[in-house]
Length: 484
Image (cartoon, rainbow, N blue to C red; front, side):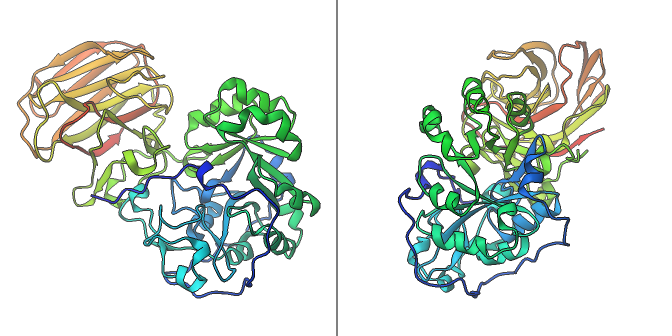
């Protein structure tokens, strides 16, 4: 079992909004433990003007933290190597005045030890690493907390940097450092919570300003929007609220974007910028895989639990020894296999193996795969979902059954079932679904009689998910998931 690190709300970590205070100390190089990352090959420089000319444009939020340890040099480097034109960087200062990249004012959430950054020296902070294994998988390497100067030396003249003073006390020193880089107004965007006041200093220096609105201040748009050149709206905002931001005529960036459906919805509403936590998946150039990557011990881009808002609380656990994932959290679960989606072929086969590694569930409980969904919104069995689709379930008694379910409903409608041999605890069983434009064939591998075909063509979306369909009970494992 991995240790859980719930993600703290952005609002709880906002810095103070008063006048900037000058910290003592300097930005001299500091000693860090762990492997040091270096930037990739030099790329054609990207400017703020070039970024804003694209629709949509993407910013690597926390260094695209669905894919790499957040706010680390590895995350920034891999984002840039993957084509990111812009990076989002959060800044805190140590007790001896060294500016470092970290979202929170403490290391409690992601650090190998918990300290308040302002209370420790840079040397003391260097003994702490970023540990994202609960979110990314057990193979995610521990990473050092980078010095801001190292990140800016690598990317401040070639990428666009959205930069935020998280403590709210480093504004003058941070702006001074930004000023020291060539063409800094072309490459930096000052980022802050819309209701705080550091924007005045940034405006006085001639920097473009992005103000992001958290849910509790969305109704203050008319009051606060004049402070900023670019506005930020949360993904959770309603369509009406998003349209109000777009109607100001200023560029709007939404945060934090994890899925393709979020991107498509926001773009349709007029949002031009995606503060994206899952760049390799959300960007249109994403590569679709044909097999799972569970054996690597790292979550593939696009493979996400049904909610990202609670961090790793609902992330399945990797069983690298068995090349499997274990779905074990309470409540009906769904794990979208976005890395293998969308399936675009008119006819295809979906195969997987499933087992209950310990005790078997009750006779009425089941697990399986949902498929045919039109997009990557969550589809949870026995929980109303915004998307329709099918789900194949397996019960411990060996019954295999296919259901379809319209959007917004709880109960699926059975299309067919077949009895098979009773399943034993720890036994892997092999399942297969063959889909054509007119039919669906479901089979448990073993005997020819463990199969059935139905004529049904109502749902042919290309997204699918692994599902545990009961509130409490034993974990279920999946492996050998393929599309052919």
